[in-house]
Length: 237
Image (cartoon, rainbow, N blue to C red):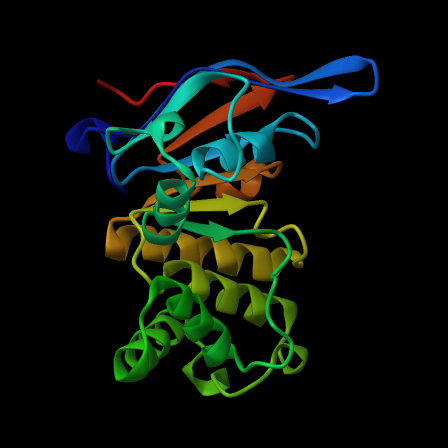
């Protein structure tokens, strides 16, 4: 594990608010979040469904913009980025893992991973090498030529993880990545994320409702309830 105090702050949210209009009502998904994540830290955000966990990840990943407050990643304030710069940030700095696998059914496991590199502008032998390396890192080299329908749920999520890390992003955001998996496979996937975190020095922010699952690997646990954080919202100074 990488103590955040040794590596400095990598992700910071200040006064983060996200509100949505639902008919005549306003729903406050996040209500004044202050958060610091150390470089190389494995942070887990715990909360029940509807607590604002996914909203928080979407804001950190540049998939959404806050109603108020700001997010800084590696010193960059996301609200100052234009559309192209925001897309570039998502392609180069962030890897996303979701509960659903979002694999292309007609492509093999390795082709699904390589497709992510196409969006990075990486082609040819380098793309093939990096895709094969990522598939190997998640332990699926023997299944690289199989399509999603030929893979188990756990194997499909491993492909999705390989796709998320193939460009070596410094920030990995995981949104309930074990939600569709059985218990044993869920533990395997969390162990894999921990292995990637340790081997690559990746900063990981994972959201889940399952504390037992993540407690052995998390550097820090915080809790999100009704759009507000409790626990240890700041990395150690």
